[in-house]
Length: 361
Image 1 (cartoon, helix red, strand yellow):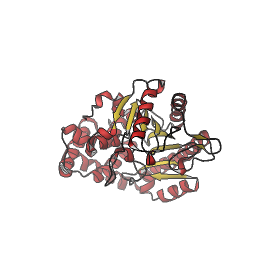
Image 2 (cartoon, helix red, strand yellow):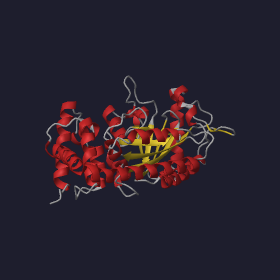
Image 3 (cartoon, helix red, strand yellow):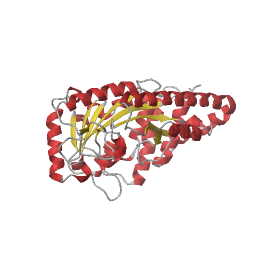
Image 4 (cartoon, one colour):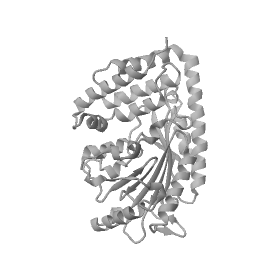
């Protein structure tokens, strides 16, 4: 198939809008709910025919779910590898549903529905993965929308539920609420002040965990961390979300304090480091992905410290996503080699910065 992103509302990137609280530090908040349909084997043990029946039942039900009205439907298992990677780069599908791990393919009858901030993955590790994104720091808003979609969908399809254990899932760690609440947060000052180790250790003591930009299995690049709850059993959704909100608010405060310390105690050194990052991006002709992530982190911090003007948080978010390999290939209309992608990435970043960034004075 040929993936037509014009059919996907906002291209599935509504969460990039930088409209939420603390949007300069927190890119997005997400609530994900794992659900399974009663009467079917869970995806890891389901046969192809059973997975297709699940998909058919869910697709019929989605048409009656107000939260998913007018949702775009994509059969992920019928997409090309580049199209699946592009969906993953936009956070619309997980690594597992995209079949990105070496030696794997997209799961049979795998699909995704996308409607604004909301989405529904089908036949990943669980039959259903409902997810809601909100721009900036808005875990509570994402939870409200996710619970509404869950109630609406739950009236149309029978969920696998146990009186004692709650929602039943393929992985025991998700059993209970089936909820994973997370925020995608940028913490460069805590890294530069070498306070990040204490912060991450504190998260683990609070029952939270951290991962890279794309969650489980991804490396931390560009000082972007995904912070989320670890446990789901024995605690309510509101309790889990409230704990994440409290802890992340404190992390934001520590990042803001670290930025003030950097400016006060190492102003010229930090300013030079950030201007070097900007200068490299502004003039580079060859830009590998990992290097781009780290340099864009510096430019994002420079904007946060008001060293750069005219560069909106939305543009910074867009640079992060559209400079990735599948997006560059999509823009070029063909699959790019790694070397070609490095050249295209450099050109794309140069063009955006030349158009929108305005150094003071």
